[in-house]
Structures are given as structure tokens and as C-alpha cells.
View (cartoon, rainbow, N blue to C red):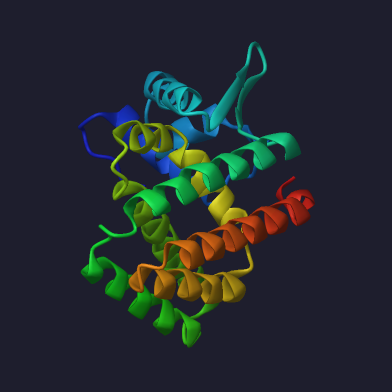
Length: 215
């Protein structure tokens, strides 16, 4: 990664966050500070500052006199995070379904239909799915009338993004997205929230089933 002179810590923090969220740095893996100094061609100070920012965001843990480690979510933490997502998103969907912009729903629906055709390579499908999945769930949250809900969800955004990438059931998730989106377009609150709950329950089951894979 080529760095510019502006805020080295910001740039390094952003790059490391992406690697952790995308599981390029595995959960529980020790982060090699010396290797990062060499890779980014910087002193230890901006590396440590970048890592501390990720500690503050909950993506990195520090063990005194041992080092920095990518967060490793326990089974209980995964269950708690998934349960919190269900509570926040189903409430937000009920709260916002009448205000959801038709243009955004049309775009998401068309993107999901294109993804369903599965004409991409695995890596491109993974990336496109992650983008669409994040945008769908952001649309639900950001159209809520509850400002505190939006602010609180932003605090756990990185952990949600991490669990998103642990979900490998892409084809099934796209089908679930289509059911949610069509119900949202119909402004059918009951049908949409039921479909959203089914989707989030299946995401949780898949993440827990694959938990051994992230070690």
C-alpha cells in the first residue's frame, strides 16, 4: 500500500481495519508490528497509533508485554451481536418502512436480481454481495426516525461488518434479500419484518456453524 504524507496513522488504521473485517488478518491472529513497519516503511509510532484506534473501535485487542491481536469473537459475543442486530433492524424497519425511498429500493432490488444470475467470479460475487448486503441493512437503519438508534448502530458497525464477511451462504442470502426488498416495496410491514428476522436468524446460524473456520 502506497502512503501519502497526510495522517499516516489514519491510512494505516483504515487499511488494517479492512484486512481484519475481510478476515485477511484472521480472528485471534497476532499482528506483527515489525512487519508492518517494513511494509509501510514508517516508524513504530504511527503503527502503534493506528492499532490503538482499532483497539478503540473494538477490532483489536492488546495484551500487555505480548502484543496486538485481531479481535476473536466468542460464541456468546456472536450470539449477542446477532440478537442486537435483530432488535435494532426489525424495530427500524417497522419505524421506517413508509419512508424508505423508492429509488433506493429499486436499485437494491435490481442489484440483487443481477447477483442472483451468478455471472461473476467467486471473489467479485463476494465483493458485490458484501456491498449490496451492507447497503440494504444501512438503508433500513438510516431511514429510522430514531437518531439514537442510528448513532448506536454506527458504534457496532465494524463488528457487524466482520460477521458479514464470515457468512458464506451467499446464494441463499441473495434469495432472502429479494423477499425482504419486495415486501419493503409493497410497504408490507409484517411480511418485511418476518423476512428480515428469517434472514438474520439464518446469518447467525451460519456464522456459528462456521465458527471453527475462523480460528
